[in-house]
Length: 211
Image 1 (cartoon, one colour):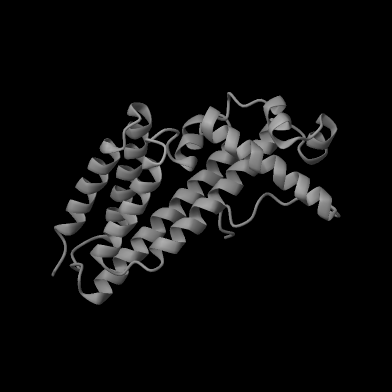
Image 2: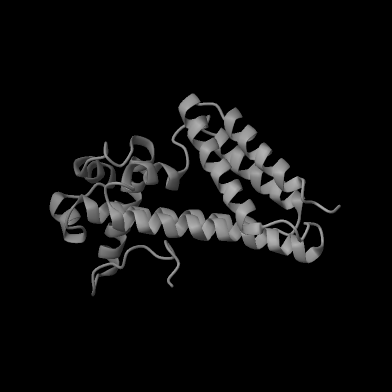
């Protein structure tokens, strides 16, 4: 199965280098706007203004807003998964799990918790509106959770995590704590709830440590 977000939605055939650059500029502008304003509040006119493109240029690449939104979902999924792979593919210890937690909290602290998770925010808006986008997001979350589970299995292989632990369930718990923490931090513009949620989930993992 192709990894969700591993590439942006395929551009039209025979697109010139300039056309590819224009398309990428539109998607990047839309992604930034939708992250800050939300998907539903972002209009195509907003995207045209932010990307410095004409209406004809926009519609040359995207038939409608739904198609653009799906391209943004794919782009964001790829960006988040690439970032998370950088941390989680090296995960082999509880200290590594703590460093992953710290990186997430520190990144979110840069904006005082505002806007939340790039994927989670879109999921809350799109899951009941666009099944194709929902499926891409679901696959991205599954892969993200799988990266956590794989790291926990490496901890088991190293003997630092008890064989009685279920890496898949622990990974789901960590992901749920992370996304819930993002939501509360966004609502309060304060990262403290995110820190608390992740620390409690990590404490549960800690209870399975063998050393």
